Length: 498
Ligand code: GLN
Image 1 (spheres, helix red, strand yellow):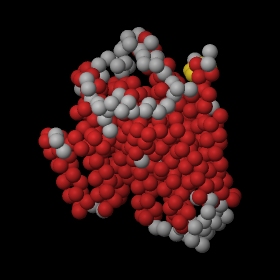
Image 2: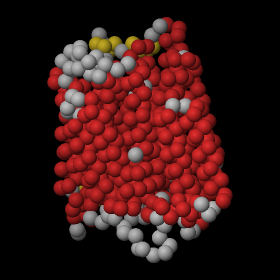
Image 3: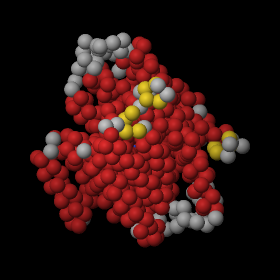
Image 4: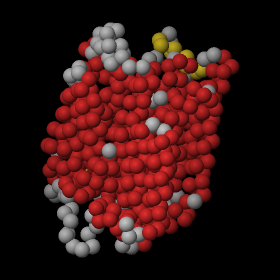
């Protein structure tokens, strides 16, 4: 056997190379993310050993944080396009990792230009790395290979091991050696990820290689797709309406939203034209069902990402965190999600595999819809928490633990499953682009989460948590009711897996 055909624990060894690369990348991403708002809001004089911060108000800091966490994922679209069109996923991941090392490296410096440059580089680096490494995981398996879903679950454990280690270690490093040591640690860890990726190449033979264009007449280029738009009246009308809505949004909201809407319109135009050009009804239908499933993705992350915002503040100010005489720090609750993932990922994946073997419903669309419902039910516990707070002035931390448990089980039904689903259904030529659109949808979800979280100051937590509960359970149920026609659109992509 060639190295790239060898197996370890029932999976190709390449999976573990990608697992470790992504683990270190996520360590650096989540480690830095955990520091960001705190660093921005610390005074320029520096209150303690952590040293000087930027002295911003929390409103300013949260605004930048919201844009940053969204942009990181929205940049997956150009990141995916660059891989599809020019260099392939394998190189895109390499360049992304190098840019990330530079970005985290620059953040070691204390100047404000370094701060912005560093964030900009991290946005570019994640955009190149994140969608493409995920597509590469799919590239390890042939069509119909039953190991694929399990492989994505294992990969997902890597993601969360990185996140868990980061959130547990980086706070301590910063407390002792200051902010920039924390940023530096993220950088060092990213260098580990890069080294691991470079040395693991022999296990990734033929995975994520660039497929050069054949230069034939029928080859579609993005430029050509856009120019085709001009001769397609129906499509042009749809894009025109989207554009007008964007411009209206530009006037009504802040300019950042205007730019975002225009960008999204450009992407929508591209997707519409790709749909039109796809050469068989099977590909068209599969493309459509993927895009429809991304509605679930936006809603899922819009609710789920309350974790870092509203639920985090709730933990801080309205929860009794004392256990056996010790007050558990608020940030530690952020590790619950990653911890639960590591415990439950293989259990959930195994559960679905068993159901499938027994011939029971276990399609990706079903799992995703169920994931939304289970995650939504997590908010029931937050509603109980808000009720307890209203009647007694504090609330028990058990509600948070249960909420995060349900959120995590829901995430495991949706997120790794969606990654795997995309690699099964997307046309190879556009695989990375679609993965990019998936991550961008989750980025939009992040932004939506921030907007919902802000609204809590007007409506109160009780109403916001109940609203999310009702809305998510409803949407999940609608998708389950629509399962039959939606599954028809996949053209049995998942029926012959073995
Ligand atoms: N927590 C997951 C990760 O970091 C999912 C992120 C997402 O899809 N937005 O990979």
